[in-house]
Image (tube, helix red, strand yellow):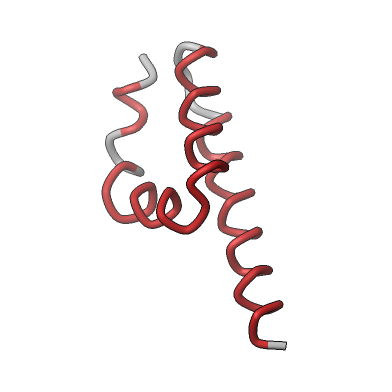
Amino acid sequence: MLEFIIWLVGLILCIKAVIEIWNLNGDFAKKLLFIILILLTSWVGLVVYYFFAKDKIAGWVK
């Protein structure tokens, strides 16, 4: 049961991160690259996104 809860939290955070990146103004290819990187790296990508890159990614996709 605990594994399911951890998986569900990861899924929700991943969907939230993808939506946040998708709604940024910027280059489509760069946004798609960041979305793919987050999806492929799972928890590591989410940690990097939420603790380091969330505030900086808007500048990176321009």
